[in-house]
Image (cartoon, rainbow, N blue to C red; front, side, top):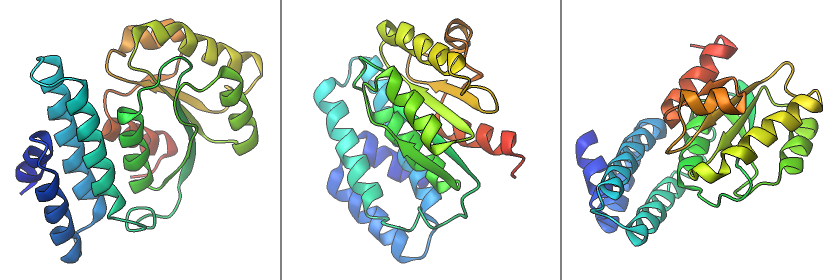
Length: 208
């Protein structure tokens, strides 16, 4: 079943994805499991994109299907867990990619993390202001463009300079991001996918 839903999304079968999600929600299946399978479908889309089987239009279409499918869940995943923590999340300045960030936001929400999503191409000062205002335990920085690494580094530096890094963890992620990037931008941790981000956050918070 899981492979079936993931494959439907990877094949851009919108009507079948929506029908399958509706059917499984109707049986009372937890939303978080369904979202995990949809995420795997998006990972398959990413693989097709890297292999040049898909292009930008297919990426956009897959993201629209994903958002439509998760929207069907309404408050099902938002209310599935008591809030155990908070994260300020956004794609760094001069990078407008939101697919990965949106998946992370949904998966974190499913795991009881309150997400303050700042959107894409977020100015450095907006991250600083949001952290100061919301006082989260975590800050999540995303990017898909290697050219945005310097803005990611500058964002971390600004949080350091304002004293807002102290007492919280800065997590980074995105297609080209790895441990070398984490070291370059001086973040606390690198998460290769949304579920890893959720697992790491829960581990840091001491929640199983």
